[in-house]
Each structure stands twice: as structure tokens, then as C-alpha cells.
Length: 489
Image 1 (tube, rainbow, N blue to C red):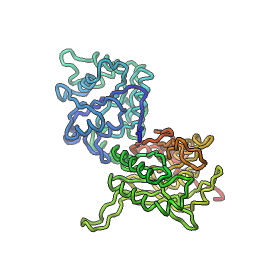
Image 2: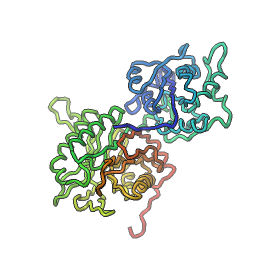
Image 3: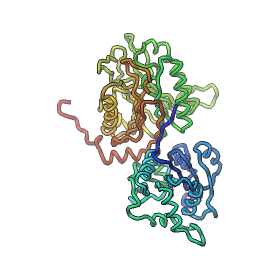
Image 4: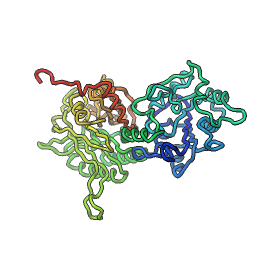
């Protein structure tokens, strides 16, 4: 299953400055501080575009694992602890001279909330404009350690400030940026807390407060053969776990696709599917969210999203009962009686809104056709949801792709939540009328911006939640506070 967390439009090399212990953090190596279960340095590496990754700093106990998992090479400045500019020059020395067209991302190893899509956009803009493109810091100044440089310009700027007797020892990055003319530097505004570093205890505390879980959106093809789909689900969850996800969202109707006998599938396979989801949650230590069908009255089913976290024992004995840390079922409220379909003939509606809590983040749940009803999303937001999980099996047709994208953006704006939508990947040879997905799984920010989006093929999106982004959106656009009952309602 291909993973597409981010792409770039240019050959990129990444240099991460990871300089070791910080006196302001009591001698702690701030690049190895845990943030939402992952070290700061690992979070930076997994946000960096694919390509050459160079870490200038000590490899420590985790260096081998980081090098293997992220294709990183660790090097040390010479002499050690000679300053950030010397470290940067050491990293540049690792880039082959012939890579003249490369764009170099210069990053700090203590910036745990960097976003893959932002870094990709910096690289693309630097390549297109042939100038330095940097993230702006929270105070509006240039964030020196989050910038994309054309390699030739970086080399020439380093040469201009090099001390003939001492190289770059004890020189600050400010000297490097002073070489740039006004037309050689552009900045991009940060989103949420992505521009934050952890130089002080207060900064570390704030980053830990807003760093939410990593969520994977698995866009898979759902087969009419439940055994084939089960294998697909196993592969998707394994890939999400390997990428460090705390939760993986699978599409609506993962148990069996629409156009099949839903009640027969619910009776024959739901229990085994639920057991599989729980086993995968236990095996990989993450929450699995997937669309299923459960029996309802009068021969119908409920279109049910099952949420299962890893089980823990309620006591320390081997015989004590084991219960999932996160456990919920959401029954789809709005049924797709539209565009010639009659979902209500085979599916009974649910009635209850559902939210779950995961590592200090509240997640609401909705399903597919629910996205056309803004009041459900605002109600989830009023219940404290920071993000809304939206499994889909979107029906294809004229204009349906444009409608889906517009609806996802609108619901994000209505509720000022992050919308996390995982659709089915449509079978290449499918020509039936039943909804089998159109792909287009997406991460949509609380002000309606599309952060990541897939095409029609299977794939995996990864997003690290940043609660500061939601807080900032709700401060700027307080629609949840301004809503008032209308006459007649």
C-alpha cells in the first residue's frame, strides 16, 4: 500500500541541526525530549521530504534506529560544539558537489510540530523562485532553522562569512542570513505551533500541551471477498503503526462494499471483523476505526463505525478482565436516499452523536452522507471535538468530486475543527451503481484549507494534530460562540 504523506517538486536534501544538551533545560538534549510519545528529532525527520537527510549532532542511543527508519546520516561538526553555522557547513559538506540543482532544507532538531506539507511547500517555492523561503517565527521574524535554500546560494553565503583562520566556529546563523538581499528571502506564515522550538521549559510545556496524536487515513480498496479485505486491513494497520500512528481510520463499509447483501455480511462476518480490529489494535498498540455493518430490526443493518483501542487489564493478574482503553460504536445518522439510491431500505438510522478521547484530544465521528448536514458537525464541536473522523464510501458521478471537496471544507469552517476523511479507493474495473468510493481522502484544516489529499489510488495520509491550530482558528472565527437560535426553531 503506497504511502503518500507528502511530495516535493524538487530534489531536496535536509540538514537537521541537533546540537545536544541545553543548559536552559537542565542539560537535557532537547532533540530527544519526548513529545506525544515520539522524540523531537524523530518528529522532525518524519516531516522532512524524502531524499538525503543529514543530522549534524550526536547519534546517541537512538541514532541507529533513526538512521534506518528515516534514511538519515549522522555527522559531527569539527571541532565539536563550534556553533550552528559550523554545524550547517558540516552538513552541506555531505551533499555531493554535482547536486547543483538541489534545494536544501535547513531545520532545527528541536521543532517538533513542523508539518510535512509546509516543508514540501517551502522546497517547491524555493525551487520555483530560486530564492530562500523560510517559515516566519511566532513574532513575525524569520525562523532561521526552518528554511529552504538553493544549494548554490547556500554555499556562496557560507563562503562569504567563513573566517579564514577559524572556519565558521562561534558564528551565528544571523551572519548567514545577512548575506541575503531583500529580494532573495521570502517568508511563509506558520500554522498553529509549527514554528515553535523548545529552547525553554515554558516552550516545552506549551508544545506538549498542543501536540496531539498522529492519525493515519487509510484509503483502501474494499473487496467483495471479506478475506481479501481482511488482508488489506492488516496491511494498512501495519503500515500506519510503522509510521508511528496512534490511530488509523479506515473507510465506511470496510466490512463489505455497498451493492452486496449487507445483512448477510453483518450476520456472517461482523463478529469476526470486530475481533480482527481488536486484535490489530492490541498487536500494534493503536486505535483502529473502521466502517462495518451490524444487525438491526426488520432485516436491516446499522451502518456502524467501530472504534477499538488496545485492551489493558483492569488488574495485574493474568486472569483479570481486559478492556479497550478506547471503545465506541457510532451508527450513521443520515442515510443516503439521494441520487437514485435508497440506503434507508437496507440500513436503519442511528440517533446518538459519538466522541472519543485520545491523549488529550477529543475526536468526533461522522459517516459519509452526514457531511451534508452542518448541524451534526457543529454539535460535535460544541461537545469539545478538536477533529472529526469521517469514513467515506463516496458515490461517483458528475460533479461528485467537486462536491466532496467543497463539503469537507465547509464542514471544517462550520465547526472550526480538523476534518479527517478516509474514502474507499474505487476498483479500477468497477462500473456498477453502488457507492465504491472515489478516493480523495483528505486532511482539511479548521479554516477550510486542504492540507493533504490523495487521488483515486490506495494510499496513506499521516497528520500530527496541532491543537494550537484549532485554538487559533476559533479565536479568529468564533462561529461556535456566535451561533444563535433562529426564529421558528
